[in-house]
Image (cartoon, rainbow, N blue to C red; front, side):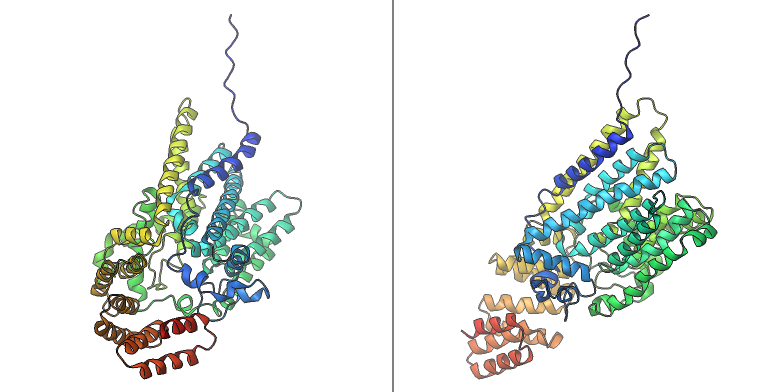
Length: 537
């Protein structure tokens, strides 16, 4: 008989464990290879460009606990990380983008460890392969660009990194001779996560349910073995209100404005389903959803409310029956709960960054379903590996395309207006970008479209007045500034340029009086002083 043909060589678990980190890092570097060239945009201005607290690293509490209205208030670790960036290379956006990408790469590596150990707890026969596949798909998914490429959303990325480290340290404690040390690390990581963003407080109930459904599978065992650990995790709930006391008014109140809790909940039924759709088909992606329509009645959103309610009820039933698969739904809905339930966030009803962590459960669920489908297929590797390669490369390409939108403020806001033409904030920012290009007529058209949707939009009124100044239409500019100041009488830019218009129209005494009062009210604001000095020339 002829000798048997040698069996094809397969990669062992130990080899895959060595190869996986390399593949994950390469995937992240490729997908975000064009993400460092973009400027600061949108809320980056408040959090970084005009944030004086990040301009020093010492004393350390200056960037961690800034005074005034800045984008990092209440999130001390994020402020400190921006201060490190500033100390290295000032206001060069490349360093801040590189920092976000590094944080994302670290989060992907930790996620791989969490998934691998979780699936091993469940004795899944393909734990190593599935963990790697899910991590690769998640790491390059374009839905995450809002967190990685948009600098200010480091809040989400850094928070997620520490939440994943909280879970990783917990899982390491299960088979370590130094279990207490790992649990202590988990508690510290949870506190660090809360110091990045408020939603990290949900790590405590999620980890407790994870322990019950997947690890201990008994409340009694949890109480006997790890009650001190969960008491430690509760420190995050004590830290949270202390940090909120230092946060901006928008964070404290949620920016609810005109929305009731019921209206917001109805909106979220639509938005949550949009999140799920973007997880499967990530287009179109939008940086700002401020124009999301408010439902007038339950009938407007009844199908969506029923769909989301069915998913929540199914998750609860599976959890009561102690099915580990319930953890997927619990992970999604508990993480989304603070921003996608009853607390009205009227200034930002939807945000793609909120799916940074929930996307993990969706990808894991899809991969597990596919793996179970092809498990009994002969030569399944010949199907699964090319399918994974196509998914990772295809999603990476979409991420590269989306990163190009962030290349300039003009490209970002042009794309946003293209997708959501009724968004007044996007129209206003597009007008700003067009002004920087010298296209004042195009900018005026954008502002007028914004004001047609939101007639009392103060920023757009102020922008319109500035455009009219640039066009030399001073009478119209003065009237526009007067209207803007009725909406926002304390706006220093409106006051300063209104005075400039008065000066141009032969009223220097009135102009100087306004400028002097403005400087008196803001004696330590160098930017206002420089603006006034420039206008006085």
